[in-house]
Image 1 (cartoon, rainbow, N blue to C red):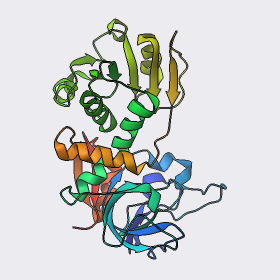
Image 2: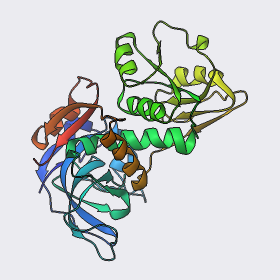
Image 3: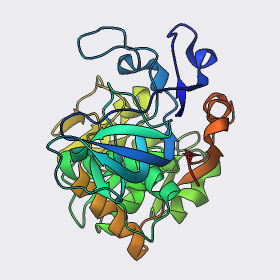
Length: 305
């Protein structure tokens, strides 16, 4: 099968190449998925799991990519819950070969059914942004209808999903970004926009939840905006500041199929849209990965038409 592989951590993107690799075999509780669409996470080559296994041993050549949509073609021993021929989407294990390939072995528990009326490219675009936003808002942020949430990077891949899910849940949403992003953020459903280049974050009203993807000084300043009992949730790693009467949580996204099912149903009923920036072929995946142009949405690799 064709796959994008990486072999040299020091070379980074320059060391990526398109190669022929053996098709994966299904272990216990795995399925084999014929990949129709995958998507790219820009900082993946900096993750230790791209280069080593859980014991710290070198696992190159490895195949990057962890978000996919495709069709189940084989089942491993003991696998239940899925059948050959079903359309699926989901998030693969960080320490296993990924989805920039024609086939991938995935634990069945990491996949959800993809409805027939949702394109594979859309399914792949929903996975990590949707799960990250859902878990940040609801699992860790405990967002309720009527509360106010501040979403940083609200025009971005994850932030735009958080804006939409929070608004659909009945929250008041304040989105942040650069001045040029104002209409995009409001278009995703935020009721208010804060220009981080020109507006003072300290003047923003107190909120029940901050959803942060930026970290650093912005996240630290945001701690002062939390109401008593509120939460600052970040995916950018631990922050120094702590809300006076609230809490902070940093987390890593998990594959939870029931949440993917909730997310895709919101897309089908029209309360959610995928934020897709570009769609490329597997042959062009390396050029897409290394492109200096920052797409406004998720970079999708269409592996199979």
